[in-house]
Length: 187
Image (cartoon, rainbow, N blue to C red):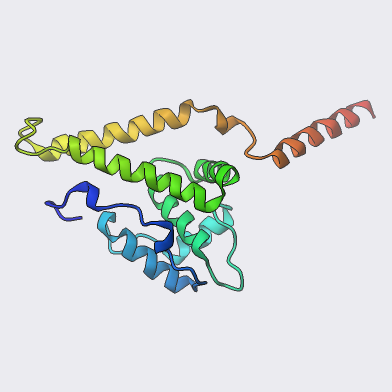
């Protein structure tokens, strides 16, 4: 994103902008790096090592026959943005919750709407000579970014879902484990 471009010009891609065909790892990396280039500090936003790590940590499902689909790309796009202020274990739980409630497409579209709205509101708060915020725009924008990350962390940490199972299956597993422990104690 260049210095003079408004924040609202960078938007999360529409669901239909992700290729509707299966891609190999190198193709996924190429597509995502192009999509993320406007906000990425380096030339590479995502690598094969990152993707493999996300599969191992169950943030995304494993590829089918070494191919990734639209759901993988949308999840990777969200992970890129969430990881700036969340731990991967928390991202995994958040994604699991979002996807279980809405499906991958619905979760992504909700993220996209929120993301686009946030970028538009950032533009309104941006430091410009007309805004009168600061004589030093770098200090102002850095403080604003830090404040937004702090606000996101505060909301994230204040939610109860982190301590709750993400699905009925986990609830059932916990109940079964408790039952097994009770049985062991009786023996």
